[in-house]
Length: 284
Image (cartoon, rainbow, N blue to C red):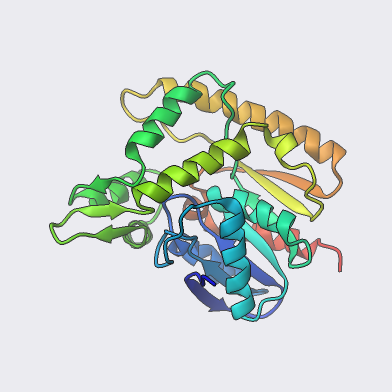
């Protein structure tokens, strides 16, 4: 049995379990979790290989879902609304698929992946493969803070989150987490889940779902203007699928939030409000 790192934020009310994104940690949830404890008991979890959780290999969705289930059992959580951002959003949906009795519902915050049909997808994949689990220079944390502040994320929270998502090395450099072997396995899983498209991926999930899409795109890095076109096309494809699902699947709710993909850092109040409203509207 593998138990994952958990932070219990406390609170009273319906149980929420919070999952972070790829290369991040449960610290990303600090601001939203503090707001959600007003009406919920809130736990946040470091996914395997991230933050302070142990590594697992191979890193597969069924294995990760099992680790989450074992961890929640160990913390006396028989049922919860599982809320995930990015990679965590995909995992939250897969947890609801695999454990319908333990997942009252799931919330996916911009956790969507692309198939190979999008122009530029291969180029994006090559970039991700090159950077996965690498060693970053000593100034890595400082640069992460600068980039975050440009998006309106408070510098202190940005620094804490960045430090929690990497491991310092003796020579002053930083090991980006997850390490390379696991990072490559995660990318394989993401490509597998994204290949059939959002609609097909969600077939067979009967738990109530809230699917939240970012309303704004991340600004392109210098020299990567081509990524804006890829990102816009992918976002439109996801948007079209979500609109169809909201009309044809009564258990699926769709919302768009005025933030980029980093919504839980940019607008923790908006995320907390949307999650709380969804939970209040659940049957029972």
